[in-house]
Length: 230
Image 1: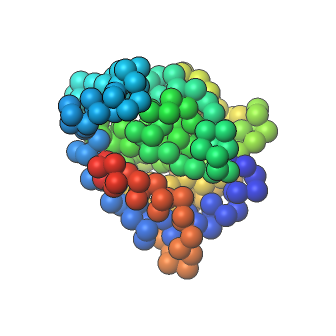
Image 2: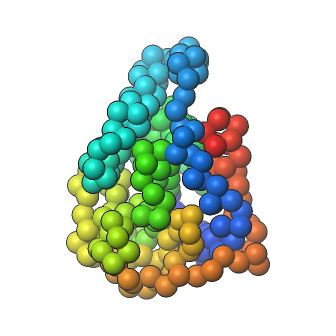
């Protein structure tokens, strides 16, 4: 869960995001597919129910490559929203931990960052361009806390769709006045805004090498590489 006390730290860290290898996530488009032996090994270690979840995830990626992108968004949003919401401290024994998609599915639990990141990587693997997606930090006015969602822009000038772990429905950003965006990122840059979620409301910021403390992202990327996902 994103807390208010972590917001300023993450915001500073995001300025160095691209130089720390975010653009390398393009390789994920071909590397989320696991071998049959790997899936069976997961089943032996974690049980058949876990193996079934992994197989369902793999089927989602492989069987819907040619669907319209809006269909992909709906399928991916519903798939990950079935996973139980759990706090990092309860699940990982840490205040903040960004799980890889595989860890998220194996544990069958996670918080808002895990939903948003897993949806992002899975949609990338299904052929959706990183240019159309932004992982977006918001303040949920309804829950009165910081939150993370995935925003999808069909074109830069259009109202984005919002993929949120709190609902299977996908709404336009202008239909979510309860979400106040703070900043967002993808492989192209970092955006900071104080306006509602809508097209053209974000101001792009260049990458900076003035802050290299994106420890969460570095840790996530290292674990994805170790798991053969990058």
